[in-house]
Length: 234
Image 1 (cartoon, one colour):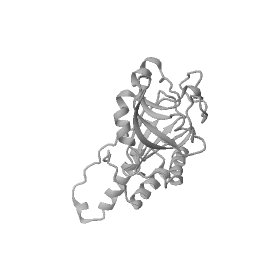
Image 2 (cartoon, one colour):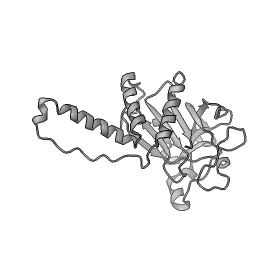
Image 3 (cartoon, one colour):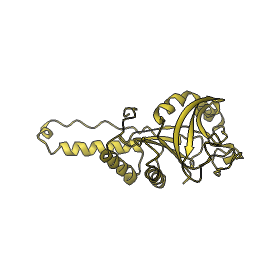
Image 4 (cartoon, helix red, strand yellow):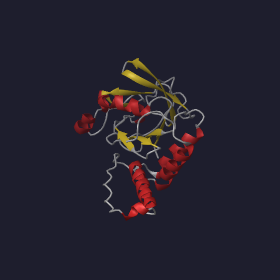
């Protein structure tokens, strides 16, 4: 994995990797593998190519799911659209709410290295009244207990009823009530992996991005403040 520091990448390097992600549309780790292949081909043009060539190690993607082309395009378009607000653009998070809650659908994508890591995340009870494990609808309304879609800015941390949590600012008309609705990132017992094993799906939040309690510290470290979460069902 790339270093998790907040050092902003060069614009040229970022655009190159974003182009690869948007064009190839494969599991993000495969993008970095393709970049390594390109580098090895470039080295083949130098005298050092006469040295014995060792076979490249097998790359095992860290995400079991493909970030589908349309979803990736939408996320990157949102990052560009809100560029003046989102100060840290080296990593993004994509919540793929077309997938069931039993799958790791909270994708942390490093736009510099192409690496990714995926986590379980709950959706709101108002988005899935029958508790099917699938998000049925979004809502931006107060009291809906539903998840909302669009781009979010990860803001400051606080201690609330769920312990340490992170406020989110909704940047689109579809989620601009997120702060007032207290739509946040927090840990929850019903988002732990053993819930999937025992019940086949996660529990539901009140619209928040609830992740497993044991995953929360890593989620906060990877997301940080000033980065974007993009949530959609495509």
